[in-house]
Length: 137
Image (cartoon, rainbow, N blue to C red; front, side, top):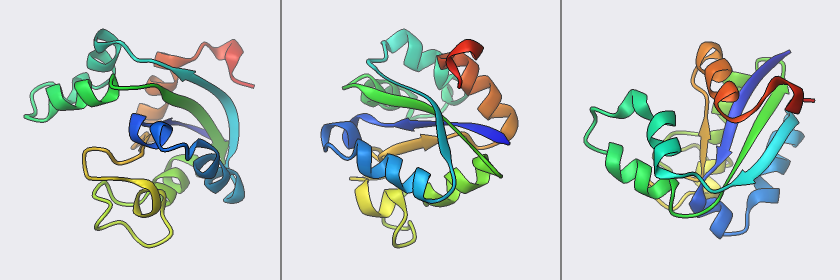
């Protein structure tokens, strides 16, 4: 069983669609193994997204991810990383396939409802950023 990290971003939390997004995961064979609602600090957001620190959108991303609470969760299932990415859809909701989370719930390419790990290696790193092993059931 693979594990991956998913974050329901501030726009989706503010729009009250947490349950609808979680239902998409669960209805498609992924199980929530850990979950919490948190408010990221600028320091935490900058560290989590440090891979993008040289990109022009980095500061805006940090500001956005600290603009309101997020829901972080560990999803588990067969091919969890790929399944989660398919369910999320393209980063730009205008290009996301109909029925994907971003097509249905994202506001823009910046406020795109969800984050999902892009590889098994990054999933492990991202999960450890938010959760201790004992918190993943």
